[in-house]
Length: 81
Image 1 (cartoon, rainbow, N blue to C red):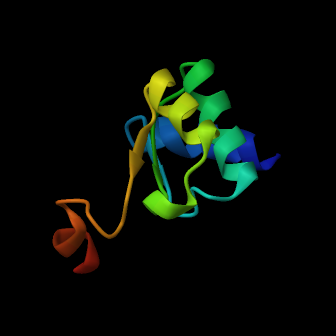
Image 2 (cartoon, rainbow, N blue to C red):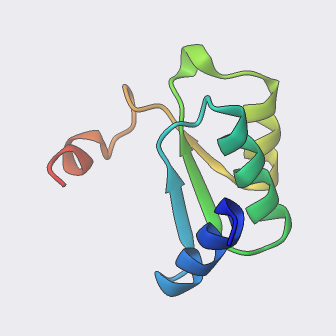
């Protein structure tokens, strides 16, 4: 089973949401794009604002939530987990 197949199976098992922590990695960007385009699940990617490029605007237009770890309002709550 490949990475994307594994992510698809896990997303379905946990209720249809995936969060990728390394949103500046081109492989993560492509995985997020494919998951949303194939309507597999909701996707969030964590990527600092300074590391974002046009591909992140494209992801956002597709419905991917692009989060900045320095400014996201959920930062404190997530750090506790």
